[in-house]
Length: 417
Image (cartoon, rainbow, N blue to C red; front, side, top):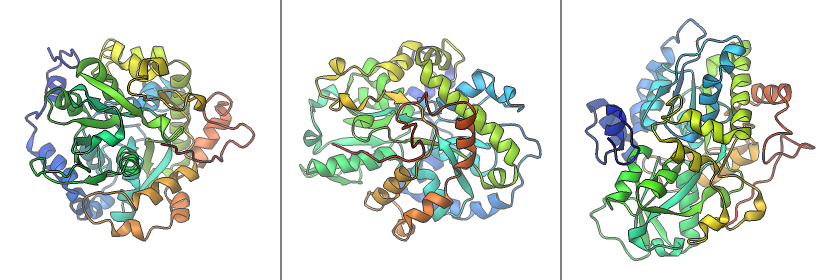
């Protein structure tokens, strides 16, 4: 039985062991992600993928990582919301890393996924892949966990440390590097065996399921990732929360709902029904976090390979009294949750992410970022119609956090370290 998630599934057990024996294909994909080479790898297949015809039926095929970011999609499936909208939905397919999920989506294995928000930016403008954001999967829901062995109590004390991020093109990498620079530290990407200067912090890519065991084994000093792997790090791997990202960037997006351009542009009735179900899933998750935590867990519908107590902590434990040392919650007045669910994709957040990506250290060629016009991206990358229609239909504006009912589609980004 796995010591980190107490699961009895052989594949899940392999996922949670540090340095699992991966298949050749997944090893290559993870290696490409770590070196930035997936961008080059996609440049050739993307043309072939573009010529591949998707399945002729209208079955909803969901791909997801085992994180609470996928809650709206998983709740929509688990509660039968797709069927209530007149759609057929296959059982969602769990994928352990971002690179295989990108590949599966590009090959039309999936027509509904959640991606870290910067991923579709990279796919569309670096690889010319026709992906469209149709909503936010959630808000907040991430944090920076440090190992107790480090003695770290603040960002300033992270100098000389090894930190894992889930993907270069992620909100996590953006926020982490902004915080490190604010603390006078320099993010670098180099081999772990190379020496670091006292003011340098080395970053590396690691799939989320590998992070808690790597921290427990002291292979890394900290990691920043989505839930429930922060809660798992706290409960099962000897970690402590240094800072919640939702306490740095108020109600920030992290994962977004993505669909293919062909579906968004040419199957409007189908796309609207899909987003109706997703919005209903988001609303249900926001209003019933304890129930949803049990539903997602291995004691429930087994969407996530974690026990309910870990998922419940990941979705509900946001009490500043519990996080006073280190001070992981500095802005109690913000009225945010550990994870929340507002599916509307605010243009101001897209602009903020694209602008910050231009100054974020990643591997690979980033020339495409320097030439991006953020105003163009907010209009070209995102479809706002389906999600707005769904939120209007089901009265979501009045029920979700971080919404001004008098001006629900506009907001100001608040970023405060």
